[in-house]
Image (cartoon, rainbow over the protein chains, first blue to last red):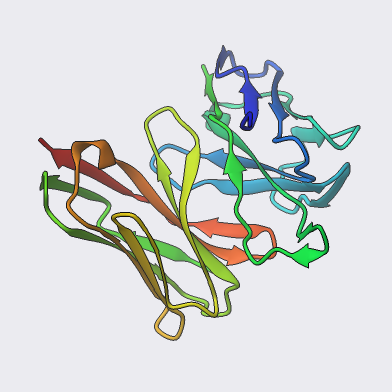
Length: 121
Length: 110
């Protein structure tokens, strides 16, 4: 089974430039998350999607960040314009639906992609 | 607001030692707790998930315990190996929202 795919793996840009990250979740996973991980810190949730709906974007800096998941599968996270403080690793994760053949799942495991390391100069 | 702390921040041990990583959280109203492993330049891999009603979970040489009342979890690694070298993160929460600790960087020396 293929895991969560992210691209690019690395991105170096100058401040004020736009940048976009792409994520393809595990097939069948309807929940998708974008996290930001600063150096030496744990990941922090930016946005969570249930299918194509953004159900939690409270931590997303909406003045410069945007995200979309138009068909409820892959997703794009965009920053425009990028600032020096945006340098971080951007992680995408997905999790399966809470119900599996009518049986509620008791676990809530999230499967993470390898991340995109962004450097803003 | 939930805060998650991991101690120690870094740990270096000789191969074969048993070790304990600690995670503490401020709000005991959690659904579950997960321990993740992160290798340099890689994403996170889930190691163990403990539901709020459980006290511990085991997988191979790993054992994780949860004490909600005291806001603590420990990850026990038996007979450590160089391949265990990584950063270990705990995450508390549930209902699709996790709060992560800052991690413990473990180095196991051959």
